[in-house]
Length: 194
Image (cartoon, rainbow, N blue to C red):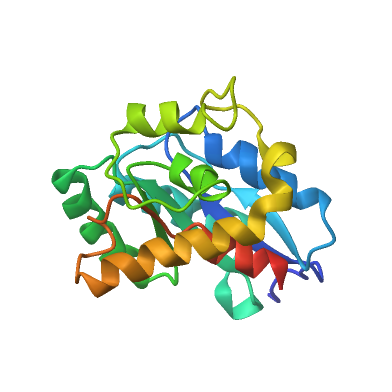
C-alpha cells in the first residue's frame, strides 16, 4: 500500500491547553494569510503537558502530519508561574522530542505574547496581573477574545520584545520555563512569516 498523497501546502499543527483556547483563536487568523502553511489545532482538551503531547501525537497519526513532509508541530503551554508545572513541562519535553514536537512556553501565560505587542517588560506577573496589564492597551480584553486585528501591525515589535525577554533571562541563567515573563510564541509566528 502506498502512502497518502499530500497537499502541497505544509501543515503547522498546534496543541494548546483546555477548551477556552485563546491560542487557537489567535492562530486561526493566520490561515487567511498567504502562507506556505495551513494551521491545524490538535484535538483534545487536556491541560496536563504530557497528556497534551499525547493528544498531539494522536492528531499527527490521524491527519498524516509529519516533520519529514516539512510540517511543523508545536505544543503551546502556559507555565502559570508554577515550579510544579515547569517540572511537568520537562517531562513533556522528553516525550515531545521523540516525535519532533517543539514545546512553546509562555510564563505566566499566552497573554505575555499579546503584551509584547505593546511593551517590553521584565516585571514578574501572575495570570491575573498580566490580564490587567493587557487591559491598559486593549480595554475590553478577556480570554478568548480575538485580538488579532488589533495587534497584527505590531507583530514585529512583539517578536523583538519576546526575544529581549528571552535574552534577559538567558543572561541571568534562568531556565526559560521558569522565566517570568517570557514567551516563545515568536518561534511559531516567525515560521508563519517565512
